[in-house]
Image (cartoon, rainbow, N blue to C red; front, side):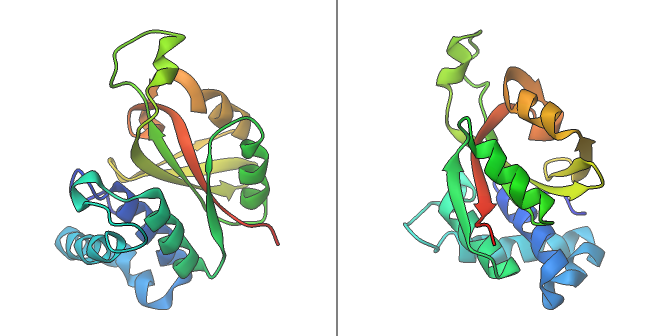
Length: 182
């Protein structure tokens, strides 16, 4: 799968990764060369920056635009949630139904140690997850790489002050974009 083309298209690359599984006209995204994929990301980024409240493209993809992009791509109604205790059950339920979940990650810009590291709550990056056997598969668009791990490991890492490559080298999950249950 393609890595993000610019510093601000992680959410777009993640949304296109999900859309390529669901939308016939986007399935070819996975087979595009890097230049074509970058053009597709730019086109979708222009659309996303006009979804919902105004949002400068220089800040990447807003959580509400990601919600809209995933809803359009899958036909499901996605909602965004702060990553607080209890929300992981909603995310796991969606994953077990075979649905994709997006996570906004962040933390690590303040250069402080526990417990103060949890004060850094600005979303900086977007990853997606899907189920793969008994594990989850994470698409991390900065590297264009997939990571596989146990759900319990993901949850533990998601509440950490340690940078995680699977989270785009950010410390933890801050927001989850989850489809509503059936």
